Image 1 (cartoon, rainbow, N blue to C red):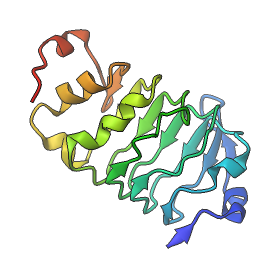
Image 2 (tube, rainbow, N blue to C red):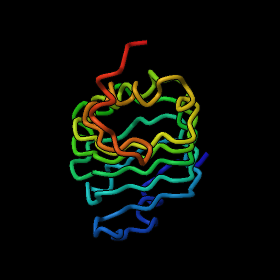
Image 3 (tube, rainbow, N blue to C red):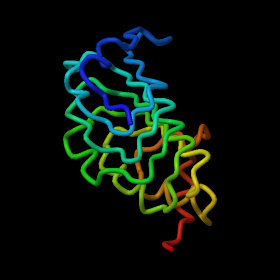
Image 4 (tube, rainbow, N blue to C red):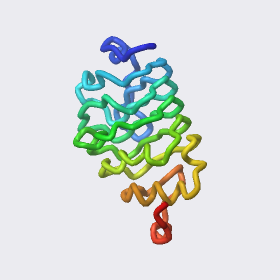
Length: 162
């Protein structure tokens, strides 16, 4: 198990992405735990944690600039219930594609992210549940795009609680 130590944080590529946002690329390091991201001194708008072994979306410090997290191709099964409680207030894009999120209730903590507009949960087991899309749209009222498909306002009117 690789841990995110300060030296790995500083040795990882720091770059500007296509939309000229500062990005920290921590992809492919086989990390199992998110930790010490606060050591980056809040310099990045995007953090790429693609292709690691992260099991829980937790231990994320207060990052006032962070707008995008790419956490696809990991092993995430749970999300910290306090993820939005003043920690990631500006997060607008979250990619959780190809993880192991099984139950729909596991995404409920994301409702505490007030600016979350773009979310991808593709290739998770919960996307195969009946009424998955309606459930997520009902829980996350600020969403514009779910799984790379635009959210239509009409959809929320037809949701019946399960």
